[in-house]
Length: 399
Image (cartoon, rainbow, N blue to C red; front, top):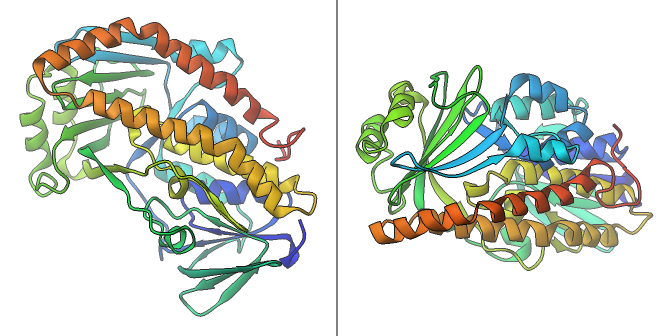
């Protein structure tokens, strides 16, 4: 890569930004990360790292560390709120058939710590980006403290509401999905949800998910309704008990077994699929490019995949940065847009409230079990390329 000492500036130090910076660093590319948060964040939530994300972490040399801190996901089960099993998939078995790693659930803070600890001293700076200018020779990133940083490429990784993206690509507004999430990491355990199991329990509109672990579990509740309707300010446990009283069993136990202060409330939003991720020498990744609803649990894994593929493409640039960015977009945009559409479609289906519609949905899900397995296998076949061939003829991120 020519220009500006072969340098890449990454705007945003979350999962997408930090993993991209680490992948670039391991490829021998000079990189700087600017994160607007003045202090290291200590988020209390947890993330599902799908198979592509675990492959990316293995490429970054962090796979074993993350596995040691995380909880495995072996099975995926859909149930009705009355207890009927609608689908059950042996996710770990399907991954093993292709020689791929199984998914894991990791605390966001543990993932961010591992990623940022892997960066060389001085790579991560806590400063806000207020503008980007570019010309034929490179990009200039302007920071809030008055500094200017010159680079060959600017990577925008500062989230779904990115103002940097909006300034370069035009304003893009998130879309409210029609439901809120209340979630928590809990040490509560229930014998009906063994460690390694993911149970997703569907009711009329509202639904409840449990990722059970050996040491801790992640649960989340989707509550259909308008955004910011006051539930976040009400006692969260009381709201959950009222909305999920018919679910009983494990759901009630996880709600009761979690401290009120540990429950996080979020309006679920996503982006419409974008027509482009690249503008000259500026490229979007992560939620800034393809924020999706959490119905597929793919956000973190896809962000990690972005970083690996982008680093591979830039390492193989052979002096043509813009072509490398175009190849990155070709490799990632269509797949990520498909995830956005699938996640949105599932969210709408899961939000059905009419009793007749709910009965139809349950029948559809029972009949579609084979299609679900086929879809997962198709994804896994594509993921295999991440291990050693994500953009160029050979692996570019050191193992």
